Image 1: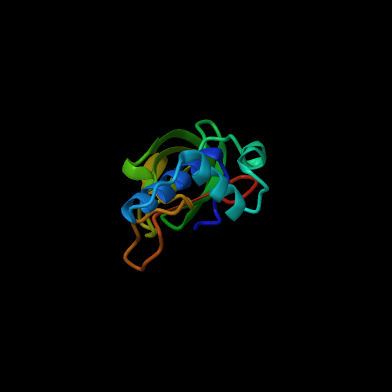
Image 2: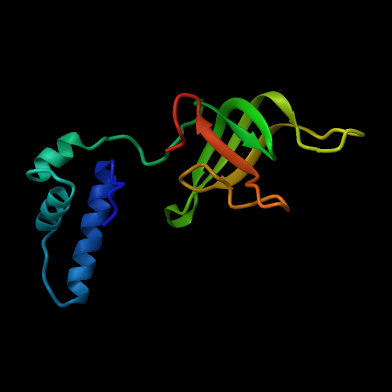
Length: 149
């Protein structure tokens, strides 16, 4: 079981997984009992305690309008989240960022390629799957006050 469960929605999703696993084994497990099992695995006395303690925040790690910083094509940036869309199956997010100052994404001194608004697909950790030819992620996002997630 993942110990990265921080929201009620994640806990309920895990309870559904437990029920599905039990059904595959030919066992019957009620949703209430599955919730209790998740609560115990997370170290809570019961589901009501777990439910009260778990965050009610959305699972999307960043929100539109939030301040972020990081690196885009190896260049540092600061800016705001302009858009966030969850990818199919919760595998990651498509984010659109608007940089405070345009970022020069060309490494040559002879010319420039400025970008101020970019979109990319990133994991829950805020790191793009796309990489430069030398293996550096195209985009790494961090909240201004903490890591992406």
